[in-house]
Length: 384
Image 1 (cartoon, rainbow, N blue to C red):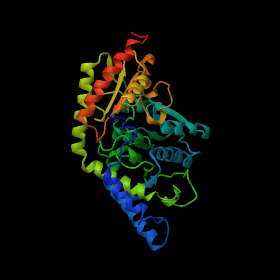
Image 2: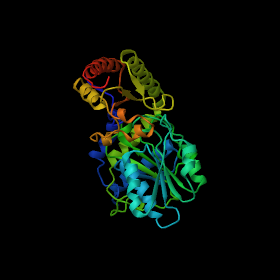
Image 3: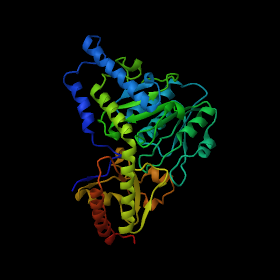
Image 4: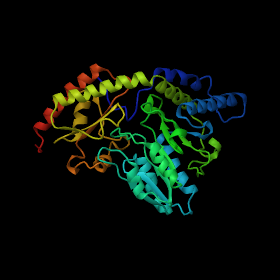
């Protein structure tokens, strides 16, 4: 049996999404930037996609900019806002210690431009709190960036509260919301979000397309120039099939949200219950209540997470040890380190992330395989 439990890394594209994309590879293939009839017809579909997305996320259609991924969106926002506002009194960028590598490295690169980077520490359960942000924010802060849901341990941050605090100090607020769809209802205006990033392949859409939401009042320096698309903020021929696919996937995710969340939570809870029944010496990383219902990040005492991953993979079960973007980096997780996990156990963790196509039969098979794997690996582990 093949079991895929790495949905936080990427998801299978919904067949209905593929059907929506197909015409834009064949009949409707014209460049949406062209001024002829076929091009302008596709441009209308592009504008309609922005309108449809804006109704779901509660923002303005004109503030949506299509990108190749959330990684690009995060780079565009963090670097673009900083560089556009360079030279003023606000020279501080604040991010959480748990941000995705693309946010961390974007912020770090700004040190060379004269910006000061400070980090908000999460609590032991993996939550970024208002109290911790209050300790470091001041009137020199330009931007605060805190992810809505952590990609490794699935914990949920109160971005509305954090955004208000940022605004109280005259700073902008950005959130990487990649892991939030469809688990959280996103309302950009009500939450006070100035900038937001999404990536389609995290919610059963196609790879290679994402979006950056940037409030129209915010000055930003473009990183990709040359074509004039997206009001000059992001050059490049529009990936219209991908944009249509992302729009359809986002609509499906929220239209079917209640049923999906109920089912995936039942499966996740069942997995955790059976895991504890069959395997000893486990620890859940992060808060069980304040996390998205598809995520389990588990520490297995005395075993390397990579060894578990490889052994499970040989049996047809796909899991992860952390962020997909750093899967080849065997250093201990900085996310788990930030919540106080002992350095001796930073490599002993496995992330199980469920999705819309998982079944109870797959969970039963996973438990069967995991039980054998843990028993075998612990038998020759030097740590007892």
